[in-house]
Structures are given as structure tokens and as C-alpha cells.
Length: 257
Image: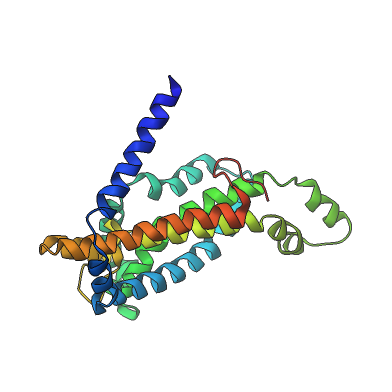
């Protein structure tokens, strides 16, 4: 009986994939790949996702280590807040970021030096906000599965906490960190709601791949929207394959370095 539900869900996923792939001809794909709009969207998506992922790693890895190794007041509250961008609808996250940079004193101060709203930088900020929790959750699971005794032994031999972190913990957690980076990058590539609210949907300026799908559907250019959807579907498949190959069948819920 349990296999029936598995088969049902797999068939549902395959139906979605086939619904996109079966409506595209080779000529449509060729035309899309030669389109300056699609090329711009691909380049902008890759560039912004890469920058946002790097920033997510810079913030997420130390945060994950702190949550995995430290006990402090209000830890459960902090832990819940870290999860909030995952649970919160991206559209609401983007709206909140828009209000922050547009209405609050701190946001206005930042915007007076760096323009974030309705700019490509806004894409990176939105992607960073949405993707960082994925890094934190994935890497934290890795750190929690690394025995603290390794660090204690190293400190007894004279190593500092910083040296233990960089020379022992990080090398042992490298596969999990890579998995977190891949997941965050994939989430950045697919980010739409927060990007739409904060960066807008301006053709050839803030047009990432999801925004390009939205813009082309809105004007009835279904063929180009389908071609871009196929590109994103291909990226998703390659992302999953990369995780399986590089990390070796890693499981988000039980990661070991």
C-alpha cells in the first residue's frame, strides 16, 4: 500500500516535467538560446546566485557552528528566527526587505550609499536572505555530527579555538558545506517572490530566469517561457546530480562530514 503513494507522487513529478518538455520543439530551444534576453537572464542569474551563495556561506557557516556548539540564552528563539525565511512566503520576505530599505532609518542610511531597491544588487540581497537558512541548517547538521572530542584534544595540545575550527572542523565538514552551498545556489537560481518585490521585474536589468518566465507569460510569449522553464529544469536536475556525485548520496536530514 505504501508503494502506491510513492508511485503516485513520482508520476505527479514526471507529469510536471513532461508537461514542460513535451510542449517544446528543438527550434524553440535554439531560438531561446540565441535570444539576448535569455542570455542576459542566464548570466544575471548565475552571477547573482554565485555572489549570494558566497555571502550565505560567509554568514551561514559561523552561524551554524555557533548554533551547533554553543548554549546561550534565547537559543531556541534565535533558532526559530533562522528558520523564518524558509517558512515565510518569499513574497512577504521581499515586501519586508522593501520596507526595510525604503522606510526604516537603517535601511535609508544604507540606501543613501548603496542603492538596493529595484537594482541588480536587490536581487543578491533577496537571494541571500532566502538562501542563508539553507546553508545554516545543512552545515549545522554536519557540525553536530562531528565529535567535539577532536577539538578538545587539539586544544589540549595547544591549538586555539580558531585554529581548531579552521584546521579540524572545516576540513571534516567540507562535504556538508559543499552540499549546503549547492542547495543555497539552487535556491538562489529559483528565487522569484522576494526578488520581484525588492528588485522589481525590469527586462534586461533585473531579469533573472524566474523573472524572465514571469515577464514572458504576462505578455503571452509562452514558447519562450517554456524554453526558459526547461533551462531551469535542467539546472535543477544537474544540481541534484551534483549533490549525489560530489557529496556521495548525502541526506539533508543526516549529513556526516
